[in-house]
Image (cartoon, rainbow, N blue to C red; front, side, top):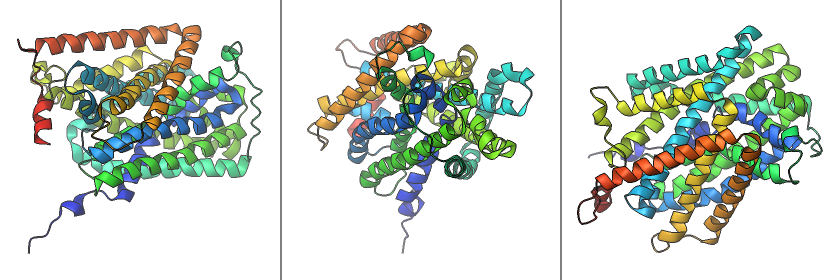
Length: 448
């Protein structure tokens, strides 16, 4: 009798949750906490709860998409189902791709910031160089193939998730719950209306959860995907929320808000020292290094595959034109991440990534409401609320950056305009005289 091994090889719900949580609890949490405190003061633990609520509304659309169209294409597949092949799908897919590359740059910079805590202050200016070294290492590991990546992914994910969770729990036990009064207002937001900076800070707290979107890529690898993908997303978000809030409360108990802001690029390591002593700081740095290294390797793998997918679907120019280089999508991805790491500090990298992600997220919800009412069973009010929340957070965040760091808006605007113009010109060049775009996704859709 022939044994069907297909299901045996596929991920269970628990396996999917483990991978999803490992991706979500990434290196971003090591640096975002200080940046959020810079906007909201001692309310930063509450910001993670509020961010989880916003992400909860957003996740509804991804859950419904995943249940209806489980696919390894994930977000790109959802955009294609909503808008069809063409400029719109290409632009928002590229925004997703660029936000992933920005995340790699953020994580690489975080690796540099934490690793330098092991060296004297004289080496403080070498964070970007260490970040570049990590990105080059990620390229080499990815070139070696999937086996090397797979062999380390599960092991490092366990260390990362368990390590951060234990730090959070131990920190709370030692330091206790800190008083959250909301009275401390950072200097860069003291002139703003009350509550405005808190709404803006949600753009950064959402970044800590955005890894849940990668769970949608498990469509071809999970058992019973029409149910388990959605369940995996929801459970992973709940687990991350508990860990993030506990960790934020532990940091608030170990450091004053001015100290958290001063050490914003390495806040967890700074908070560990007064709670656990020197060895606690070293352990935190060690976990941060493991998290950043594994996070960059996995993210480079995912984002380069996304770019290759877009190239194969003819949503972007063929990467084969880059010559005889092995895996040109990987080369382009790492090169772009290195450029961002060199040009911008961690705060600006995170800000640009938040802007790109929120715009793409709004497109996902609108595509579901506007184009898929007949194909997907959902309650329109929930994605509409998600759009309102995203717009409110994005507007507040853009205004704060306009006041405090307009360069972020300039760079983000230039990036969006370049993506739109380049994508439109590419689509026009691939349109025949009858106005038909001959895209790879049309072939894919006809088969499904």
